[in-house]
Length: 68
Image (tube, rainbow, N blue to C red; front, side):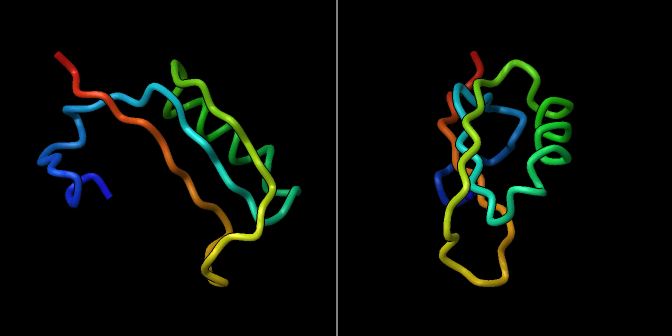
């Protein structure tokens, strides 16, 4: 959560890398398409994994850097 990290405005940051955890392999294609549309310049790694919370189908974590 960006707000918990002290980022007041999400437009202040860009992501250098993203890691996307998917619960189901069949979700890969629509997720890749969405990520490519919204984060076209970001290196993204896609992984299949058991996600901590049962209700989640996808979890995304990343490294954000402040825009200057």
